[in-house]
Image (cartoon, rainbow, N blue to C red; front, side, top):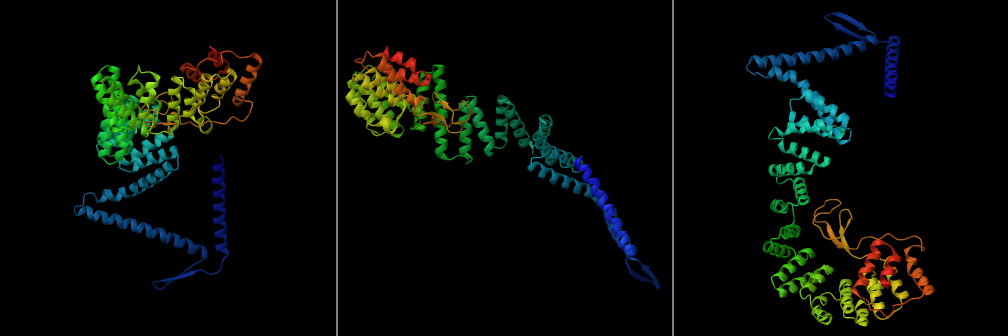
Length: 498
């Protein structure tokens, strides 16, 4: 409505300007005198302007007629396409103008305008490859998925544009959540153009989601061969895929293949904790305890992790606590100042009921880098040394206020996983899980969970305590973790007294 009003106002303004100009020229003095073959012609100012305009039109018509005559002359001399080129020239100009305008509209996000320009370009140009591509992308932007898919299917019919069509339909299926069809289309697109980086990444992610580990390893090798993947990244991701393949073999009950796959995964990436654990267990099943210990010690020296310690304990499951402390020295001496090493040594001494040694092993970790696990260990040490329930419960309540410690977190979406997985269960990214400490939001009010140690102590002082002479066990540590997970301090106190 507003644009129509503006156009009317502009039209009236132009007409008024022309009328004013004509009136001014009529009143103006002078003019133009032309002598032709002895005859003198006089033109006034307005007549002179009209004559110049007519002269320009005549020159333009003359050039057009001359071009037509030249095309006719070429046609008569054997150029069969001369006349068709002459008449198609204007159509091509209009078509290319519409095409460029459509591309500009597509780049600026105007889907409907781009679609209209694409249809206009299709009418004037005999270049379906270009116009169909513009039509498909414009239809996608305008939200017309049906027309976009129909146009992409037209592109699939020609060999020159087949990859573009397949890729376009693949992206549509991904947007619709049809990963089965998208996987088949990605395989087809990758076969047509294996050097296309985006298609290779999409195919690899879809294969990992569908747990097609063998196919994913082939795709990964092709990306390395094409130079689209650094060798160290390929080695790491190939290890992740080999580890996932080994897990499937274990699930199928093929023990020999599982052992070989696990050892191969660890060979490809020794610092990959799940691969080291699985390979060590494979060696343990074969009775090669020395190989398992060496493998776990090497992995611990790179990346200390509780799963490595658990696998190291499985080498001699029936040994006494004192013997275990001595055997674990080969593991703990690798990184003695690491928090994981300190907590592991404290746990070993707690199991041996040597609580002063456990306190020395833990050091000042609960002050410099407190986590739910280290604080819970301190509660177990206090219980073992005969501290009152007030002190023990104060430590257990503090476990609610400190970070939980490192966990498997996706680098892409920061989603926390209970265990390592090759593909993030939230954003479906491949090989993005890292063992690190998640960010912890700060509590604004001091009356929140930070007050729990004081509240627990005050309640205990009034009601009295018993059982202070109990010895801390592994159950205390597990119960404290349940408190942190459930967020219920009172239930944890009842479990600790039991």
